[in-house]
Image (cartoon, rainbow, N blue to C red; front, side, top):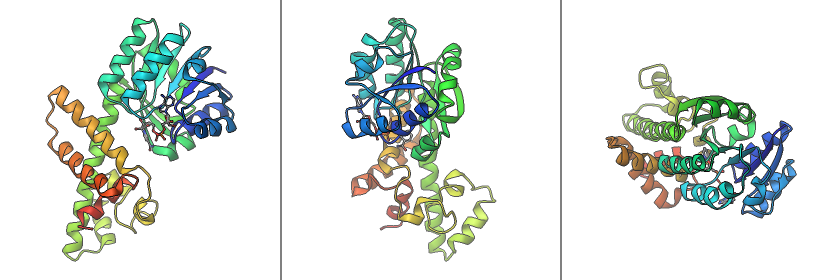
Length: 293
Ligand code: NAD
C-alpha cells in the first residue's frame, strides 16, 4: 500500500483515484471543486484542505488537471515546495510538451523524480481501469510508476524520455482528428452518390480505407451500435477536448518545424464546429457540420 496524493478529481481523475482506493492504496485527494472532492471521499479517498497538504506525506503524487498552466501552477506553488524527498511525481494531464519538460526539469533540480503519463481511453476507460498510459521519463522512474499505473490502466507504454508521453498523445490524437474528418467526408460523399451507409461500412471496414474512427466510432448512426452517432453525438470524447489536443499538436509542430497541413486543417474545422456551439458534443458530430447541417 502506497501513500498517494491525487490532485484533480474531475471526469477522469475522479474514477482514476477511485481505482487506486479500490486497490487499497492510501489516497489523499484535493480538488478546487468541493463536489469533485466529496465524490472522491465517497469512493474511499481522504480529504486534504489544499494541494500542499495533500502532498506533504505522499510517496507518489498523481495529477490530472485541465491544461499546462494548471500543471505548472500546481507543481511550482504546491507540489515541489512541499513534497517529501524521494517521492515520485506522475502527471497524467494532457498538456503541451514544453510545459511537461519544464516542470520535470524543475522537479529534477529539486532532487525529485517525475514522469509525464497522459492517457487515452476516456471516462469509460478511467472508470473500468483500462486506460492506455503513454509515459515519458527515465527507465527507473517508469519501473517505479508501473505498478501504480497498472491499477488505473491496461496498456502502459514507455514512450521515451521526459515529455515523450505527451508527444505520443498529441500525435495519436492528431491522427484521430484527421481520420474522423476523412471518414465523415467518405460517408457524406457516399450519401450523395446514393450509397447506403451500412453498405459503405461493410466495404470500407474490410478494405484499405479502414481505421479506428470507422470501426469503433463510426460517425453515422447504424453500423456501430456503441458509437455516439446513435445517441445524437452525446460525448464520449468532446469536440472541445479534440480541439484542445489538435491545437497542442499545432503548437508542437510549429516548435519542432514539422509540416502538419492536415492537422492544421483539422484544427480549423474543429474550431468552426466548437464555435458553432458544439463544444460539449462528441467530436464525431463534426460529420453534421460537414453535411451542411
Ligand atoms: P475535468 O475538467 O473534468 O477535471 C479537471 C479537474 O481539475 C477539475 O475537477 C478541476 O476542479 C480540477 N482543478 C483545476 N485546477 C486545479 C487546481 N489548481 N488544484 C486542484 N484541482 C484543480 O477534466 P478531465 O476530463 O478530467 O480531464 C483532465 C485531463 O485529462 C485533461 O488534461 C484532459 O485533456 C485529459 N483527458 C481527458 C479525457 C476525457 O475524455 N475527459 C481523455 C483523455 C485525456
